[in-house]
Image 1 (tube, rainbow, N blue to C red):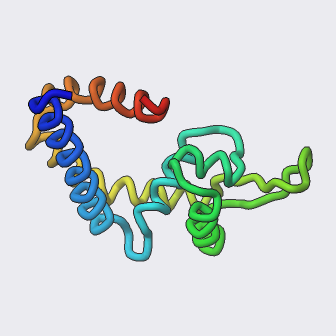
Image 2 (tube, rainbow, N blue to C red):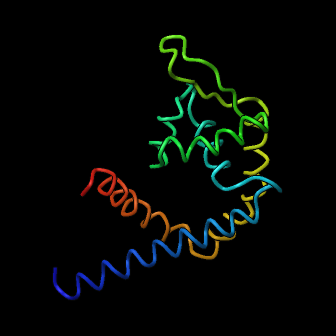
Length: 147
């Protein structure tokens, strides 16, 4: 890689990492008291799908180990935000489903973070962000494929 390409790659990934850190920190502060960003992420994911998922499937979605995801799922189960049931087709597996309480918690969290997101869109500009999203999506897909 040439020096300018190295510099571009370093700058790009530095910016991506900082954006992630800053966005998570601001969103976490805006979430309802006691809700962690990881919990909101799982609730939001489950709200967008119709069928149950196994812990391993959810972990893969977030690029985490099943063990790391278990901690978040345990907290969500304890709060009553998800249902964990046996998979009758394979007794070794469990199925995770969003509960009505979980949908309500997710909706409440969305209401809390929406003003922050709206301010971000207004400050950065919807047009600029619409142009950035396809590039970021392509980068995510390529990284997920292992480049």
